Amino acid sequence: MLGGLFIMAGGLGFALLGTVFALFGAWSNLFYLGLLVGLLTLLMGGLMLAVPSGHTIWGILATLLALASIVVAFAGFIIGFLLALIGGILSMAWKPTRERFLTVQARRLPPSEP
Image (cartoon, rainbow, N blue to C red; front, side, top):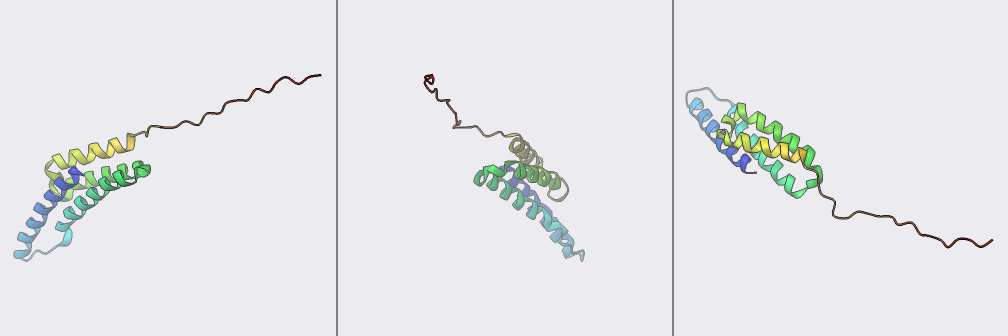
């Protein structure tokens, strides 16, 4: 989630650069993709906490969004990219601990009498 905040900050810088270009007549919505990528990365972090059963999907999406931030958000000033990438990889590799194991105990019947 912290990586998403840095990516949003980088996306804000990219959006400000787009605003400067728009003042000179070069308008494009492409510059606002950094904010969207940062927001989605933040959302993936929240989903990892809220729905841990989908940790593999959230991890894959967070990793892809971290890679996309290189192009559209100045890589979240590098720290955002690294935090999101590490968080996504750790989420994919996480194995939940089993708190309860179901055990089956065999019953021994007394030997049948002939």
